[in-house]
Picture 1 (cartoon, one colour):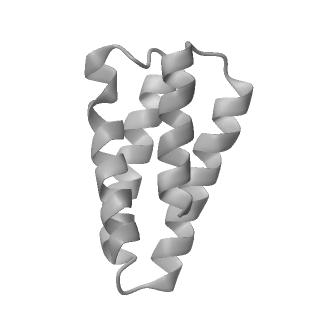
Picture 2 (picture 1 turned 135 degrees about the horizontal axis):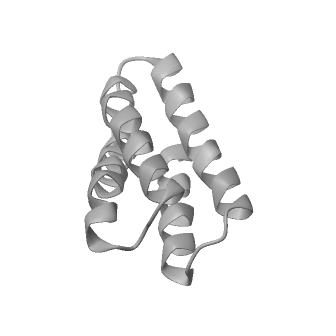
Length: 88
Protein backbone atom coordinates (compact mmCIF):
# COMPACT_ATOMS: atom_id res chain seq x y z
CA UNK A 1 0.00 0.00 0.00
CA UNK A 2 2.94 2.34 0.55
CA UNK A 3 4.28 2.07 -3.01
CA UNK A 4 1.15 3.41 -4.77
CA UNK A 5 1.24 6.32 -2.33
CA UNK A 6 4.88 7.03 -3.19
CA UNK A 7 3.97 6.84 -6.87
CA UNK A 8 1.16 9.36 -6.37
CA UNK A 9 3.47 11.79 -4.56
CA UNK A 10 6.07 11.46 -7.31
CA UNK A 11 3.38 12.02 -9.96
CA UNK A 12 2.17 15.16 -8.19
CA UNK A 13 5.77 16.39 -7.96
CA UNK A 14 6.27 15.80 -11.68
CA UNK A 15 3.16 17.86 -12.40
CA UNK A 16 4.44 20.92 -10.53
CA UNK A 17 8.22 20.68 -11.08
CA UNK A 18 8.20 22.83 -14.22
CA UNK A 19 6.75 25.75 -12.21
CA UNK A 20 9.88 25.77 -10.04
CA UNK A 21 12.17 25.99 -13.07
CA UNK A 22 13.96 22.75 -12.22
CA UNK A 23 13.07 21.27 -15.61
CA UNK A 24 12.87 23.19 -18.88
CA UNK A 25 12.03 22.44 -22.49
CA UNK A 26 11.56 18.80 -23.46
CA UNK A 27 12.28 17.54 -19.94
CA UNK A 28 9.55 19.79 -18.49
CA UNK A 29 7.04 18.57 -21.07
CA UNK A 30 7.96 14.97 -20.34
CA UNK A 31 7.69 15.56 -16.59
CA UNK A 32 4.14 16.90 -16.92
CA UNK A 33 3.16 14.08 -19.30
CA UNK A 34 4.63 11.45 -16.98
CA UNK A 35 2.83 13.02 -14.03
CA UNK A 36 -0.50 13.01 -15.86
CA UNK A 37 -0.02 9.35 -16.78
CA UNK A 38 1.39 8.25 -13.44
CA UNK A 39 -1.24 9.74 -11.14
CA UNK A 40 -4.18 7.55 -12.23
CA UNK A 41 -1.85 4.57 -12.78
CA UNK A 42 -0.54 4.82 -9.22
CA UNK A 43 -4.09 4.93 -7.90
CA UNK A 44 -5.19 2.00 -10.07
CA UNK A 45 -2.12 -0.06 -9.18
CA UNK A 46 -3.68 -0.78 -5.79
CA UNK A 47 -6.14 -3.11 -7.54
CA UNK A 48 -4.58 -3.85 -10.92
CA UNK A 49 -1.26 -5.54 -11.64
CA UNK A 50 -1.29 -4.18 -15.20
CA UNK A 51 -1.58 -0.62 -13.93
CA UNK A 52 1.44 -1.26 -11.73
CA UNK A 53 3.39 -2.56 -14.71
CA UNK A 54 2.39 0.48 -16.77
CA UNK A 55 3.57 2.71 -13.92
CA UNK A 56 6.91 0.88 -13.90
CA UNK A 57 7.20 1.48 -17.65
CA UNK A 58 6.65 5.21 -17.10
CA UNK A 59 9.44 5.10 -14.51
CA UNK A 60 11.72 3.22 -16.90
CA UNK A 61 11.11 5.84 -19.60
CA UNK A 62 12.07 8.58 -17.14
CA UNK A 63 15.25 6.68 -16.25
CA UNK A 64 16.27 6.25 -19.90
CA UNK A 65 15.57 9.90 -20.71
CA UNK A 66 17.59 10.88 -17.65
CA UNK A 67 20.60 9.07 -19.11
CA UNK A 68 20.22 10.46 -22.64
CA UNK A 69 19.01 14.07 -22.35
CA UNK A 70 21.45 16.46 -20.62
CA UNK A 71 20.25 18.57 -17.70
CA UNK A 72 21.40 20.34 -14.56
CA UNK A 73 22.36 18.25 -11.51
CA UNK A 74 19.02 19.13 -9.89
CA UNK A 75 17.11 17.98 -12.97
CA UNK A 76 19.07 14.72 -13.10
CA UNK A 77 18.33 14.06 -9.43
CA UNK A 78 14.66 14.90 -9.96
CA UNK A 79 14.20 12.32 -12.72
CA UNK A 80 16.29 9.71 -10.89
CA UNK A 81 14.17 9.93 -7.74
CA UNK A 82 10.87 9.95 -9.64
CA UNK A 83 11.95 7.01 -11.81
CA UNK A 84 12.88 5.04 -8.70
CA UNK A 85 9.57 5.91 -7.06
CA UNK A 86 7.55 4.78 -10.07
CA UNK A 87 9.41 1.50 -10.51
CA UNK A 88 9.27 0.53 -6.81
